[in-house]
Length: 232
Figure 1 (tube, rainbow, N blue to C red):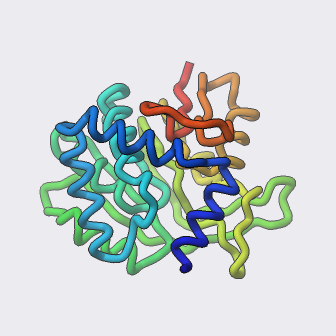
Figure 2: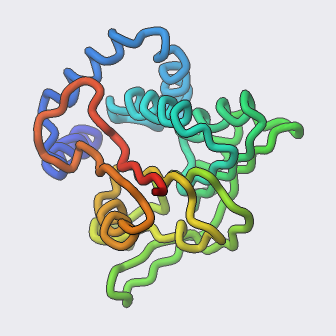
Figure 3: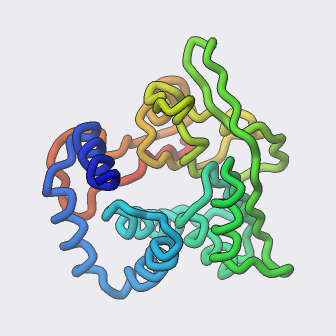
């Protein structure tokens, strides 16, 4: 029942109807070879209790294609999970570096185990506490950890927006501002307030397209899942 309620909440929040499910089913049939990697990752995470939503395979396929398009040499991820395995596969094949940060120690350890990090890998999954700044003009939720180095690509999917059992949908994840240099590419996973904040405040730096999920219209196979920001 909890899973059903979450799905209903997601549909009400983003206006997703049955076209959402139909688009995923058709897309996976049209790209069966490319879905082999993502389907394997989804299966691994579902076996450990994660990835309940049906969009997960499509999300990972979109991430896979964005990596092919932008070819980053360094990646930082705010919020670890299934996407971490896509990133790890990419950096191993392209001799890149990858850092992922998550507030949940058990989830970070689970992701680390599924990746199977070796000493030769330039991959780090890091646990960091979540800190909330509720008294700013825009509520900010971020990881309480120093970040060194520059990164070509950043994925924003954390920390969690839940505070005291309440989801603060208007809050933004702001760790990207702590980087010594803004990434060439920023991807935002669903977080509407964060995506709209970057679009409003960094439009002089980035060309962007917000996620099609925000339109509240019926989606079609091949729709844009992530909000994508690319430096001009």
